[in-house]
Image (cartoon, rainbow, N blue to C red):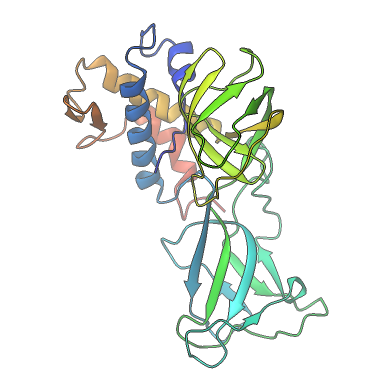
Length: 285
């Protein structure tokens, strides 16, 4: 899954890689992606927004906790219930039937706000006009369609983009200004696209990533750049920089023929752990 919590522009701009030109961009991006997945494993959560369908068993109570090790919840598109245990989810819960917790969480807020954190449970809304009283005790009784992950935060880029059809993997920026860099995930309407390369105003894109659907993107489409918590971004840069310092990725597993690199078989630095520990699942409240 192509997601990076830092970009080629980040690592070159910070000079942590001491790399110029674009000849090594593909390998740098692969390394950033690999370190980002290692961050996910360390934190037992992912920081990108993933649209997906999940299934949960009911507990008979008014609250439905997300199981340990389950992805964080950003938003719910629909909750459907299998009321007769026939693996058909025939009953859709109304928006008035449930509320998400913790109540002060705002997973779609800007990443630097204290309230920007994910939901961890779903409750029957006992203060509304909803018709539900509990999550029935049945195996795999509930189907949840939603966005999963720590948060979905973005900001608008200075440029706009032309992508045209859903199958097009080349994008054209309206200008060479702005922040778009290889490694960025962009939100174009409801579609997420991943930037794998950039040459002036030309982008190479992976379409419809993270469970979204590729769509027609006409000229002038507004670019929302998805952002991640700053300590997470910095942790990826620190670890990528340490790997680059070893010359030839000696603390990574690589295949020279393909350029694939995996940050494997090593532990994070103390500085990285300090940045990531508050984000480890089960620690954040």
